[in-house]
Amino acid sequence: MSNVTISDVAKKVGVSESTVSRFLSGFKVRNADVINQAIKDLDYRPNIVARNLKSGKTGLIAVVVPDITNPFFASIVRGAEVAAGDEFMIQLINTGDDLDKESWALRRMVGRVDGMIYVPLQENSSAVDELDNRSLPMVFVDRVIEKNKNLDSVLADNFRGGELAARHLVEHGHSRIAHIGGPISSTPGKARARGFVETLRALKVDLPSQFVVESDFTTLGGYQATMALLALKSRPTALFVANNLMTIGALKALKEKGISVPQEMAIIGFDDHELSDLVDPPLTVISRDAHLQGALAMQTLLEKIRGGNQFPPKQLKVDVNLVVRGSCGSTCRYRNSKTSEFPKTLSASSRSK
Image 1: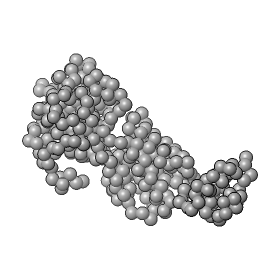
Image 2: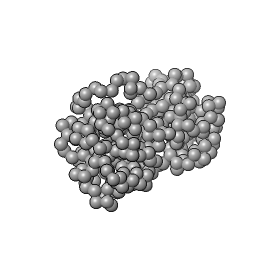
Image 3: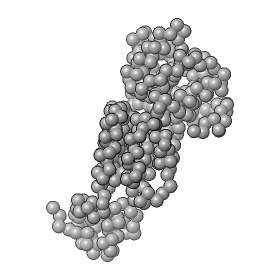
Image 4: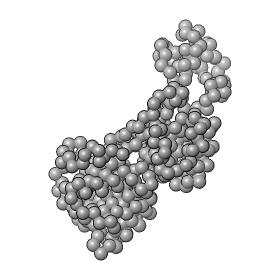
């Protein structure tokens, strides 16, 4: 182990020990490049245990997600990990869509981590009630808890995603469009369904109640919901599916029933996947940058940790984009949402939360 101390680094550079300490803690200081080079030249290795005891910090940040098998949540974690840099390590907590496990995990975080990036299972969850009084810095991602909406959050523009999907399918001439949504108790499930339903209403497209199926964001849930829609006497000709796993389930059901895409059933999924353009036909999706959501959440959390929660809460929103491939056919005039100009049928007030 290196015997070089922080004092040796400070002497070599000609700065105070506190300046080197601030540099090591991630703050911007003068002569940062010189300090960094001196650390390398002297092979200085900080005593992390001693630093943590002195500062009261653990060097750990928890990232709590409901389902790590979902590629979206894996991307959130990766984005957060990159943004954390070398100062913090990620402690991943996978709750497995289990409310009891989620509550147990959150209680154990107090005193063990310096902050938490949190994807809650439900909006009405009381899991964070005990944490509010213990000042654990926290940032919500993808979903928020209703009574904690004043806390920091990084969401996607879910309403806009539902709007883009509905408009795209209507532009293809569809009037029998169904939606397989996530739980209405969740932020994305509620907002994507609302964007879809309100847009069809504004475009004067009838939406039978049986064409809106609430599911659970899983592959099995998407499969079962699609089977239910296919069993209807008068079934839809187009589907908007609210996440990537349910879209996989929907495609499986369509294949089993011999329903051709897009000739007999057009389909749009929410969230892109690296395999989306490899399936036949390639899948049209509502895409958002999950890595960016994770990175923004980490940057916001680090501000809170370093600034002692002195910054006002942020409610950040990541844009969504319609990626047009082959699963809706090729007759639509609009190729993607960045260049499309749709009629403005929804008022600003109707899109507010």
